[in-house]
Image 1 (spheres, rainbow, N blue to C red):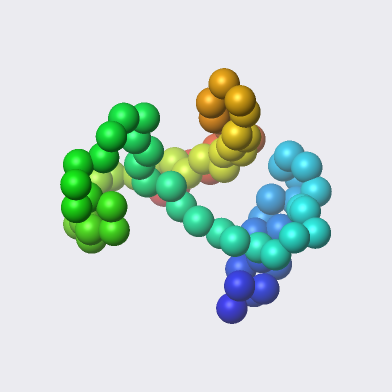
Image 2 (image 1 turned 135 degrees about the vertical axis):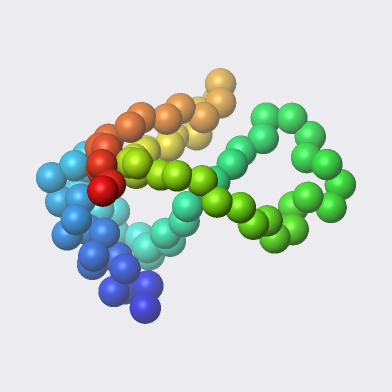
Length: 79
């Protein structure tokens, strides 16, 4: 199934950013990040909620010595 997703992502983003890397595809969706301590028991605890979404952004993240850097490569309007 991962290869199917990889092919779909590569096709959908062919004109955005850099060509795909040769390593194995590991797709993920980051919903939240914390710069400070996380409350005990919070990691891995399921959450539920809903909110309106009018766009999805393709973001490149780079881990640098001074912290993470994020670059929005593309925006996809929904609806």
